[in-house]
Image (cartoon, rainbow, N blue to C red):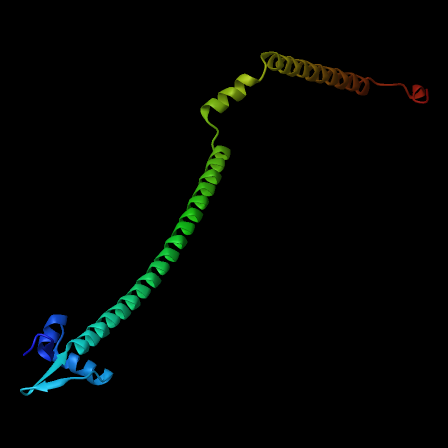
Length: 170
């Protein structure tokens, strides 16, 4: 065979495919062939057409795969954005809950320092004034008791002493 022709088998081996596929391409695209010694051979221009067909097919496959990959990347990017937004929302909620929890803890349990500050914050003079007021109120109460006791005794004495009948209208 001459250098400028190839068999279908040789071309299939070169392109990494099988004879059936090359035959289909030839029939589908009406590529001219020759028959030499019961073998179908292809001239250089036919070989070039088949190679071009494989290149175009490969490019088409690669484009399809690239489009799929691009679509997949977009979906992953959207999912990543959603995940980041949700993580931010979770972080904000967590901070709000922590702040609310801290404020509730502060309301429930005053610390020992706070109790001491409250006790120490009252002036000693105010405490003394209150003690003095309590004593004076107790003394006044005692005086009222004594005074009421004296009045009771006077009333008893008046009731127990006999009065004369002529003094009633005085």
